[in-house]
Length: 499
Image (cartoon, rainbow, N blue to C red):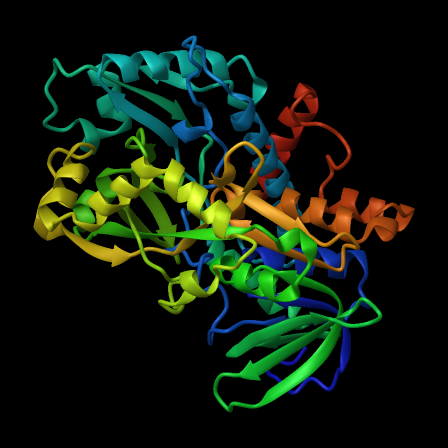
């Protein structure tokens, strides 16, 4: 209810660390499930959604596996593995169901403020890649999530879809693309701000900006003592929480380590930074209308898959290319250069060393990216937009991502490129680690978290009914039920203005 640090509560039901899309989603769900819950939200910056959820820091795509080639690897026998793509597509459909509920119940205004219909495309060149993309499309269209995916190697057709990409390209150049008309662009920053604005108006909810969470310790009654400090006044205070969610992006790992829960042992973080080239020429921006994803370089992290990306940011059309990966020891864009070093503990040093040993290709790739000149960046852009001119693009810093490193029985440690939810055995504390496709799959991630952390309540008829109101397909499979999936997609598309 208050937008400040003057809460008189010494004990609250829930503490949410970080005011990004994950905390916002969880907070709204919990208040729907149990309206009398008391919730404190702590954000270290002076505004909501300024780190990973911000439009220029986040990948922006509603990740539904239409165009992201890293979700569909080619097996040794040449066939295409599509199970991850199907899973992510279902997760995004579920997420859209919840967003439709938010629109219908006044949590957000016009859906166009955060979601837009923008075609999703994959674009490749060279015989091997063209052959791969053709096989990928053939495999994907067998599943109902991907029916309607078009494929073409015809330059004339491709010029209709993506004129900028094809302009000036050699007619003999072997290229191909897939096209999904029902793709989306999502401004997670705008969505998060709307949700937090509504959430803080609810009784029992306090938003605390400019607040650092300095420590998390377990009390004897298994609740948690949270130590926070006001970054402006310097005032410090303690409060107790029955449940803590650490959704602080790259800042989640250090706080998870401070909790001391056994489940946190062995986890480490590998930070990857990014940069965008942002177009400044309105004529160029208006000529392109698609998210065009290519194939990642060997050794590159998934968040660095190159794409020529149309976005709607605060009602204005933008065109970005990138991201160019880099390395920084910061865990947050506005974090400390010491973040990586202070995260190294006795219980995670072996997994960290193992990952360093096993990921030389990634290390070499990041070094090459850091060493890139402006000319190198322009050359990479011109592979997707041959007519790109250096004076029409400016460099902008993207968000910071911390990839998960965890113990692995075979190799001591393994580097994960997805998201990882780490929860204590009693469900009283949970933290979200990792990066893509996090924001786009925030809803099923939070539903699963609630089911694990509020086990008894989640099974009650009241909570089950509320889940079904928020997500009508709850308890059913969109992956196996084509009729339900089609009806769900049709309904959410209408509510979200995507038709």
